[in-house]
Image (cartoon, rainbow, N blue to C red; front, side, top):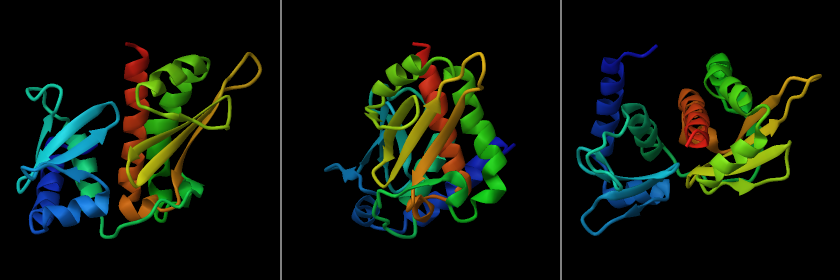
Length: 205
């Protein structure tokens, strides 16, 4: 389990890299908007963050006094620092198909798939209601299929088959085939888990 010092180091290294780039290059690559004052406006799940270069300080637009979790900051910063601009392909792949993802597969299942099945495996209506708060799109897959555009260039699909007395629930999270160009396999696993846990939180009101 990473320590807070590890998170701070990861954040610092990425900020150092980003601070050497023009803001317009960063926003153009990532698909975000820069405001007149140079801040970057970043919708993330059901929140909107403002990030202020060159130190890339995060604030929550709805509640500037609320601290933005450092794990979310790192995921967003890593996305901003992607080496390339990858266009969304519309071709969906399983997590294991992301190059290098096999090493992190167990973590992906533990962080994302298991909680998805445990909480929503017999409550697809609750999943849909929570996903509505993330502006999710309904897709024709499983008993509940949703597409969530977490980042402009990294959409996810959440698919759930409801369980019953005879069968255990099944779930999956798919990525656009270009996801591996925008996020590392570890970040992709963390991102999937963040989506699921935000859905869980929203389902509880």
